[in-house]
Length: 275
Length: 260
Ligand SMILES: Nc1ncnc2c1ncn2[C@@H]1O[C@H](COP(=O)(O)OP(=O)(O)O)[C@@H](O)[C@H]1O
Ligand SMILES: [Mg+2]
Image 1 (spheres, each protein chain N blue to C red):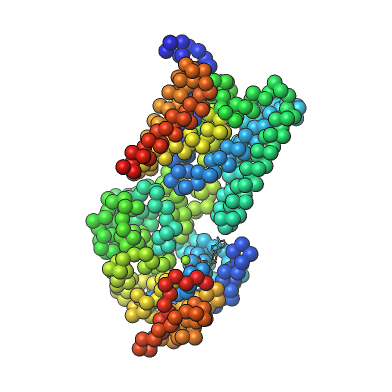
Image 2: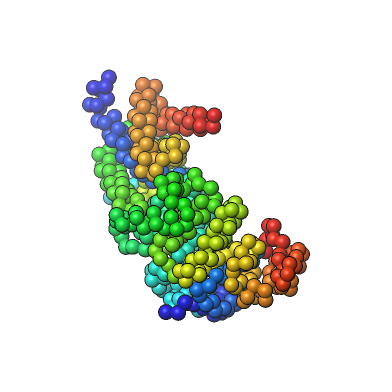
């Protein structure tokens, strides 16, 4: 059985996909959790879905035949993130909520409309962005995911201190001399990149669980930020692989199982902690 | 460079709403000056203008000869800022020493790597504030008063000439309030550090401040405390229904939780 798992290229690529997704989820998921901006996750995931639908459409009708829809998804995600960042910095709560609501509505409306237009043989691809397509990842996909994950991980390591400072106290950091605006946007862009990676692997519906829950579970331990990241990385990989294994045995979508297991752990830990 | 804050014809709008209107004043330091006014009066906004976080829609601002927007980096070297404690994200696990170190490293350029002598300096400044035993503790596990002292230490570690504090006495125990006030007064008298402190409640600091600036969107009055805290001024700032009590020469507003 195990041997078969390793030889099967679909399963091999799915495992690589889970490891990459876990790296980007744990670094940025941790910051998203401690900064309390988890709403961003769902918003950006939907933007990515809308962007992917647009990309597939443009490819299908021959307007952008050589552009991977994933690139369009990434551009959409970053765009929505920057707009949200501007709204949250300069605006009131109401303005922020309007921005998020509008982004949600536009992305979803676009995705649903385009699903009616694009040729039916390409519909599974959109479904892939919705519920994840771990088992359908190609080597090209993996190369793209690996590149983005490497960018996220390296930049987060380099700017860890700055990210920590602006998360802790953005106004204070700025008054103390840090250019908090630049670091804030850099961090939001990295977060959106990581959400796009999750959208491609586990799917936009499960992104929230995969991004937020491991970090939320790890942060219960009241440890420093690097440890939270490492623990949540281990949780993601572990749960990801278990989810994948069960999905093969039970013939169910892996991302659903991953979401269920993570929720189970999170709820157990929360109850256990209260007592 | 003169130790002065000069504001001329300052107007600030946030989201189309006028938050500060036609403010003019000139504050000379080193002194202990309080900015006072009800919740929503624009006190925090004024401090953010002084530290360059908010760009005014109109008006001239000079802090110790520097323009907060243009000379932000230079300004950060001479001003220590203590933000409102409630603005801090306490779910971020940071140790006290790292919070204080932030005061040094934010002022440096990338890469921000702490040096050995910085750790000694952290110990020293924590000692000055009287909380050296908190060095290794997690910030969010501390009491409100202790957290406030850590934030003051963070602002002081780079030897500022002016300390700007936003509501440092709010929601902390009375003992810590006294300790902080006495400490600030000592800084002013012995180290000649200017103190500019926002408070929505003047009562704890009345004996200590040299001057007070009464604000509610507009500048209502500025000067010596006995001249500013009149019944008329307090009613202008806190509304006609505020309870004003007189004690000696001073009037006090009973400000439980009054909103502008
Ligand atoms: N970013 C913002 N956008 C819009 N309005 C704001 C913003 N920040 C503060 N305000 C408003 O400006 C007014 C002054 O706020 P603030 O300076 O925080 O008052 P204070 O510190 O005196 O309590 C309040 O009415 C507040 O609602
Ligand atoms: Mg305030």
